Image (cartoon, rainbow, N blue to C red; front, side):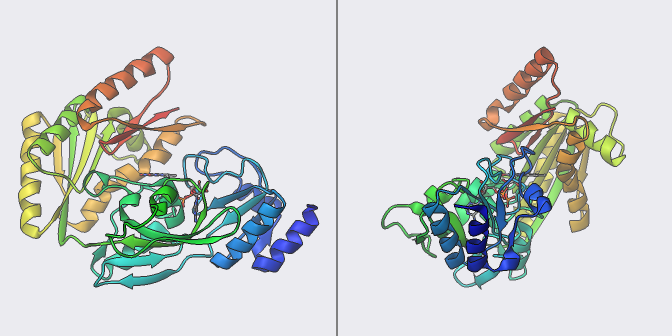
Length: 380
Ligand SMILES: Cc1cc2nc3c(=O)[nH]c(=O)nc-3n(C[C@H](O)[C@H](O)[C@H](O)COP(=O)(O)OP(=O)(O)OC[C@H]3O[C@@H](n4cnc5c(N)ncnc54)[C@H](O)[C@@H]3O)c2cc1C
């Protein structure tokens, strides 16, 4: 199909102002956080499932590649239009359609920013645990398509654990309803699970039904510095062995820690070799008991410094270290490759040792950080 004809047809579907071929838009929508660049021929911003279905029928008829995109901060390159064609942005589909408090369910469009969704349900005393560190920029569509998870996944699991159903549009332009709004919705093929983690390759989600939890009454963050990452990892095992499942857990190696300290200008203890961030949540009594227990275990294992947050602001400040990790490490080299490595918790010390060995052998900087179920080893 001729380019001009394609643009006219797309304009007739989504409106003239929601189609762009400008060099700026094509460049902006030609990459995600991976920084691989491939320019789309055109960017479209549909508003409804029907509009997406019409775009997909047009693209299917003329064999034009379509790449869906939400917040554009994925690290897999999934939102990069490698084959050109149409870049379909869901940013205009940004409404929370329903928060059903008695049934602990919410329905939202894929362009809702993750943190906005969390804040909206929390305002009603409910809880949406998945917390990728990109949550102020990433969107629900990208979260389900990448099955994103953050520090809370140790206790609460990743995004897929909260998706009850969704409406999606197939490559041929059909609108499909998968799943439902109840937990026991087990009849038929589980298309919802198939869509979760499919990186936009099986269909485009147009609304998503999420399961919610009651918001924990209290939480507390404990920040602990150790001399080595191995000791910090041993501490994680000891905490779990004492039957405490932290709500959030993050192990940051010494290299990453120093990178953040250089970036923020905040001083570190001289022999700091790793940081463990631990958050416990539950009823106020439970939180008090678990925080004290965590402190005791960390001290016994050889912590150099322990800070227990007394306020929400203090807790936020402690966790901000994690959010600064990516830019701090990225500053050290012009090119950075993120790799998620997943090992059983008890093998984290071995993983860190192997990473050190590879780092020395190949003369590569490999900072390691992330929850102690995955480690992001960033080769720079
Ligand atoms: C600083 C930083 C920290 C990060 N921390 C974490 C972390 O802690 N945990 C983690 O898991 N990830 C993390 N990420 C990666 C990333 O933020 C997540 O993968 C997030 O889910 C991407 O969301 P997005 O809205 O940016 O999606 P995009 O990058 O826009 O898209 C991601 C994929 O989803 C597809 N997609 C988008 N919308 C739809 C839709 N409506 N239907 C179907 N497919 C769709 C796209 O085609 C693409 O394949 C981080 C990224 C950055 C930059």
